[in-house]
Image (cartoon, rainbow, N blue to C red; front, top):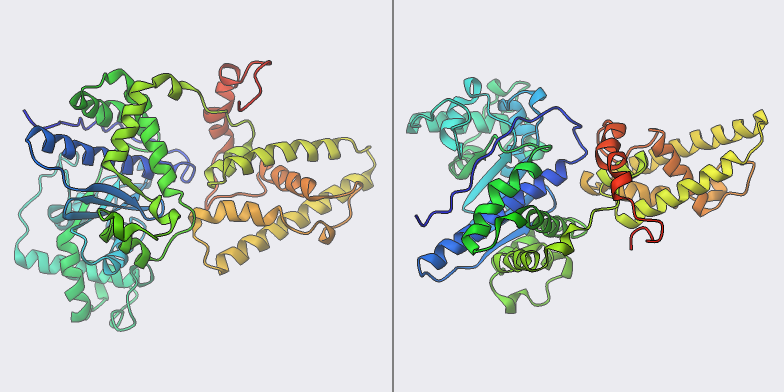
Length: 465
């Protein structure tokens, strides 16, 4: 057979933290899509056909675009833990990303397909027509898809338009398009101008559901997604785990290419992805968002040739503040400064005598600090800073607060101790760098303490060398 069959391992998802690794999951689903493009390259080679240009372009964590010759797919990844229940209409549009996809479809109207990828399923008893029209793979639901008639599709378009009206801000609807909006979706009366846009969007919409969840995808992906590609390329399958890690690192780097860009700039890169001359002069951070299949295959070749290079373990996370900053997308340097300054703060406060006045001053300082950090976060939100970059911005702005504006302490305060105080407050769960709180202790055990003894460097080997 010429087909490369990728196994569909779909282990059950559990109810872990809501925030810690949702962006990591999205990067892994994007990596899966990149591997699918490589698979198409291999099939073309086997059949003696010229390979068209294939690439993945990251928008910013949540979205990515797949270029497969003349076809383009805009993908949005959404995590929903199983304890939250399967997707129903209202959540699917508002929180599941359909409104978000619709908004972006108006910015990139020439895209061939709009796909929502999620680890959860549709509640088929309540979303049956939508599933019949849009599901990519229906075998997990146990409810075979039915043919959607023209009349059913028209009614489905109208229902989607009603829900988009309820999520009009996320969907980017104009004032005219929200005319007829009511307090409940079933009572909304969409205008013909909105229906004329929703119908073609719905025809291109695909729902890719029941994907491996956050805590399982790294276990299943090397076997499910990487090994068949390695076999087709003639590489030994035992390196699948390291190939997966290297490719996901590559994708994460493309998704971290600094600040979100205007869609006009992104659209320019999509249109000129296969044109080196027209790509000249585009910003470096924009170009970093693009990964071609040739680049990804080069990474695979490097891993296969030098597998030992990829066996070096990551330095484990040792403090709750480190876990929180990692979850908030703070960089390695920021995490290192936090850990170092946390020690400085601890040394300064632990060296105080037991005088009640000393402890009262430290307590008053800490309370004032936390309130100021709240003010920093409030200002960032008012500036429209995206949640994906909120953690790093919150950390950076907080440690730059002027030392002279704080209540007096029993010891001189400086920038390093401000940094240490912010790290200490985060370590004590007074400050978070994510949209939601999570069990930092449990994550620390998973990511750090269980590995400290086995992964920590020897005494004669400097940490991080």
